[in-house]
Image 1 (cartoon, rainbow, N blue to C red):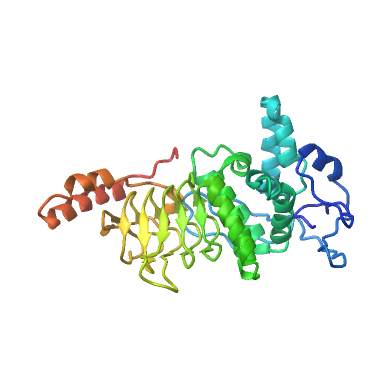
Image 2: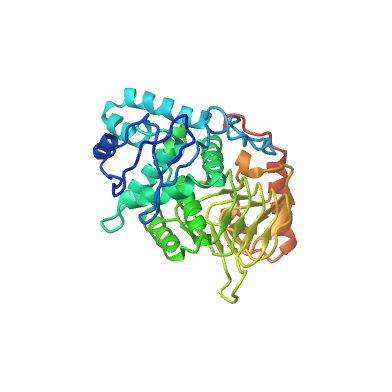
Length: 368
């Protein structure tokens, strides 16, 4: 295998297998050897050139920045991986009881790709789907796909920037199940398009069982994505999620049950989907739109608008370019329920217009 690292992995003899025990893995996987080979069981060894060191420019989706920077080059140091390692070393000093865990999960590896594969494999393993097998699957996909290599960095940056509960890059990599579910989906999506649909569906099922996140392998998901909490997120087969989108827990991007073929929502770049929002059918959520928590969306939502209610209605425009980056939620569900019994639809609309206008005029919370 080749990592986005200054070093290649060590030589992998024919017939050898990955070891799920951290101690065994560290014993058999020296950190700085130079000749690891990637091979299939029935194929000749394949020597891979170095993919060089990773991306020079991060963060690319900083809090509040409306547009990504130009695509970074696959050359030079990897600041994300360097930060992860530095944070892991500090945490090991603060909590010696976690030092073995941190070493096996992060410090024993040469690159972010390998560490991610190790962490995800160990979280998803079961008695019949071994961590050794899962790590081979993840590494073989990620290390051959530059788009995934880029996405795993933009995603971890999104968690660090937008989730106040995410204390560090290291904590996102180790503990954030939304991040884990998202990266395993990226692997499953690649497998799906390689024709390995049974394996892709097996990964989807395992992620759903372990993390409570159910994303069909065929769903198309952009980069710089935040799955905050992750629990209860359901994304259907033909759904598309654009870049820089933030999805809170309990979000459903589903079908109506009446159609086949292209039947799931398309979410534009920079949209923010609130907790427990349900979006059904082949409809479009425009770029930079905001869907309030608990809403049921059955019709298109224009770009840069706020939609709320059951069923959801557009209640205001939105001045923010990408609400997914600032994460300023409008929790309107309880207010909507208080006023949904009103006889006057105009009064309800006026009320929400007033709320949305006040929200829009607020200054951004610099402490977030």
